[in-house]
Image (cartoon, rainbow over all chains, first blue to last red; front, top):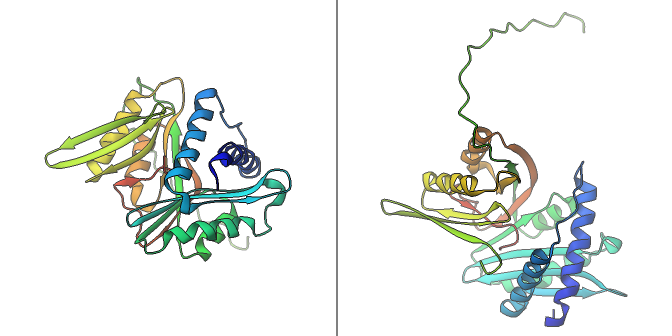
Length: 167
Length: 101
């Protein structure tokens, strides 16, 4: 990956994440892309490319980038920050090729860590490259400052009934 | 940090913890013990804009304390992807950043 690929990597990331959102979320929400977020995203990609060039790889497509894999290395720790493939060319082995190139910077690392989406191809790739998958949860909601710890109510006693035989 | 993130620091006795808050949510937390990690999430919730969702991600089995906290706050708990790790299991006192900040 070169420094002048930064904007193309950012654009590919948006296309891939929007596609992922549509495929995996029952109620897809558009990715927030205000000016500050675009600047932060590009700065992050640029920082990775300049400081961790060994871990940052792209695959050229016909008209735009086909895949990008950005990894960082800090002493004994290796982390994959981004792996995206153009939704038009997914399932063709490009993501695997890009990630394998990034893994070259993991040589000798004691720890490798990837926060994966629920895309089954990504999960399979990470498992196949020696990572153990830990299913993850996200917690979110608004903070209700008026909310108090729930008062304990006396529980209604519920007697389970045996299901009628023969059903 | 250079793009609006805030570093939060917690100390108790000799133990320390820190967290990064951005976009009204916890982005990263690491602490010497679970009590400090929990305190950091409470702090993020306390400082969040109540008109927008707050939250945290990448909780795995050892982070049951975060699920308890989310339930206490009335937040949604959703499955979302996986943490893929080699060479270690994610510890209870560390919530990683999805994109490594």
